[in-house]
Image 1: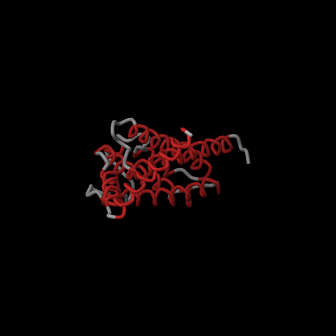
Image 2 (image 1 turned 45 degrees about the vertical axis):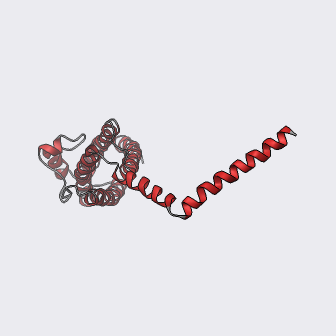
Image 3 (image 1 turned 30 degrees about the vertical axis):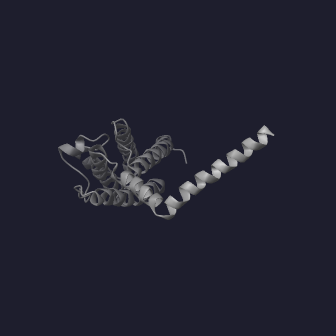
Length: 207
């Protein structure tokens, strides 16, 4: 009998709670609260996030610049296919980063032609001007090997930049930045493994 009364009381309490929540939602209070939370998420970015997005634009732009050499310099069809994927993926990501910065009133770097100068060399994995010249002068199998080695270096730099972002207090909490940086990390680590396999096959003459 006591258990039956308890069940009835529990049911009445649940009904009362539902009745208390529903009118508020119907009057728009729930919507206002949700909008406030959404606004909080949108604004939850830091200067470190903006710096990461800005720097990664230049980093990606150099990868695109490197990959654009492949159609005329590479001997391996696999290297040319890899380069085409890098161009497509990283150009799309550059557009995402530029839009994120623009929407928040932040300076938007020009990605044309890669990134040079002191700021470029300060980013992990970035090629020096001498390395870019060396890559541009290479042809055939020599280009394929050098391209893979330098792109592995470049990708490792991007992974390091993501690690630095998430290691900064309060950074990487913005929804777009978090997803973007996480995707970059996974994609670049996957491509590093693929390029390492390609490099081994190239050096040892495996098909």
